[in-house]
Image (tube, rainbow, N blue to C red; front, side, top):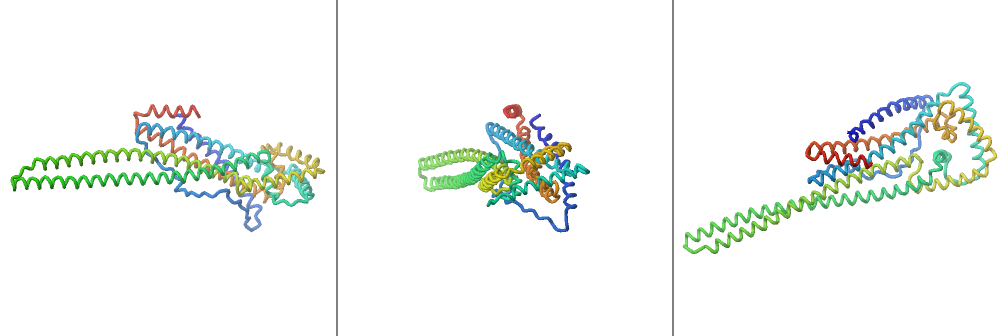
Length: 422
């Protein structure tokens, strides 16, 4: 089936990416060795936007056991919805992964430029850096944003406002998810307590039944002894004992039936709570990964810090507007840089205008490569997590089909319907 074979295709793409990554990582190591002066290079690490409050064990997917026919259909529907969401997450992560990989490939192409073109490129980048520093030297400013932070934000200038709003929304969503996990955990704990109480009630009924059985038998024996010893009419006492036994048996039977019914309802509630908790945990992990990646991508701690840096960035841009005497020269050199990069098939040429210093400074280039590899690793982990959960959900559906061959057609119809809708 196409639905169950898509993960195999994703795995082949992943293997292909790993071959490309190996080549890029090896070249990164070579440059790092060539630029090393015997002292370890230390890189400042940005603080994470949000720490994972839940442990891996708490975030592990719990398995629910559908009981009835409707529970099994609902379970398949929920699995299909989860797989659709995971496919969306994988697609988004892969799209961003390809962009990061393209940037790393551009670095390789730039590193291979040699001869007269390399000299020209070096001179152009030197001019761009000098002209940029000249513009910055004109600024009598008191801003907290650094040049490195400006270079990091500059390529995404047009989308930063939307990204800030998006980060605020994601942080609010994260708090809501954490609240949901907490509430569902409490509900699950309460349901387990109810199930334990039902089991205790049932055990108490069994004990009571044994006691009543012994008591009734003892009364029957006592009445028989009295009858044969004193030759007294024991008809009514016998009837009373029989009536007591009948009433006791009826009460015990009704209570036992009520307990069995309550147990079934409680088990269904527990399964529902577990399924909801599993879905919320997936959302928690993905949202945390998105937040962490965004914070690392833009070099911020959280949405508030992002907004402050954006405001500082806007002020800096306003100051720059006042000093445009060297714009023509800078524009000319930028165009020359574009021409050389285009000649060597560099894809994201515009980005290198703000990273011209890295072309001439190997240490700066290594830092960029290091940051890109870090982002790519996070994307890899995000893709691997979602693919593993997706495979698990597909296996659960296959297992349900194997355990319930009579429902195979209904289950496959549900799967096809979900594939069509998504």
